[in-house]
Image 1: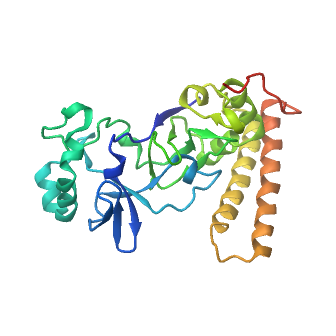
Image 2: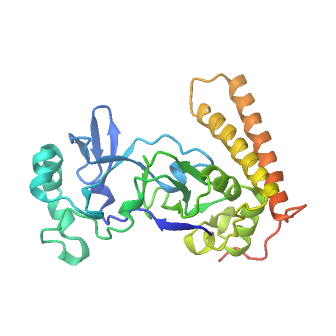
Image 3: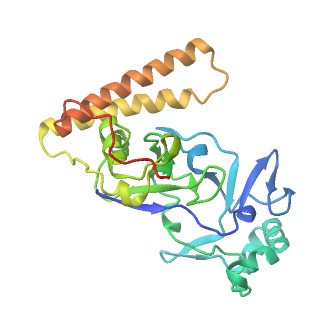
Amino acid sequence: MAQRIFVGLQTSADDVFILRKEGRHYYSSALGEAVDVEPDLLHVLLKGSVHIRRWVPDVSNLFVLFPYESVSGRWQLIDAGKVEERCPKTWAYLRRCRSRLASRERGTFEGEQWYGYVYPKNLAYMAVKKILTPSLGRRAEFCIDERGEYYFVGSGGGGGGGYGIVLTESLPLRYMVGLLNSKLLDWYLKSITTRFHSGWFAYNKQYIEQVPIVIPTTSSEKRSADAIVERVTEIIASRTRLRDRRLSDQVRAQLTRTVEAHEARVDELVNRLYGVTEVPVTFEKETPG
């Protein structure tokens, strides 16, 4: 596939770095109370199957404290003095959690890096346009972060983690997510991935990277790709409207039918691209255990 697939943030102290917004304050699981911190180092956080949904992510009230910055193209921990100067309330909060943070990795974080992540990987890909998927799902749940506004975790309880996909080919994100959410490519991924109890499947990097992606070259393929983008655009618009809880049941039902109709057309277009007339529905892998 023409892409880079990466796992989400791994802090080893999610109870400190992940905060739940409550009014004007943020709740810290580490302290068991609401805390007052500046928004400067906070970013909206998605947790696996809790927020990463098909086409459009759910609204999240979780935020991750992200004490990193890019310097000359390299991401590094923001200097302690700079954090304290820019965000004194945030620094005070971190200092309250210092013993918890310093005890990670058997106390090896006692030094100057005590307020950083244990595994500071893939930081540069958080704030870019990307496709997101939960690491576990019953079906394809790929969605688009078109403004690079969503950060996400790589593992953890309460919904688990996820993976991000950054395209290295000049392909539209909406074309790629249309392929990945299609019945055909979801069938293919499920045929090669790990199957768990109750119909759950692993959507991990080692499986996603095996999914064959058609890069349109002929005029016919380009027309199909453009049509997929158009349909996905309509799906995203309808799915975004469906997040409004004030909608009447009638409007909600109408939008749902619109999504289903466009999804069916996307499936037809993807089948045409791959030269397939019928998608198999059975899998050879047995459920572990």
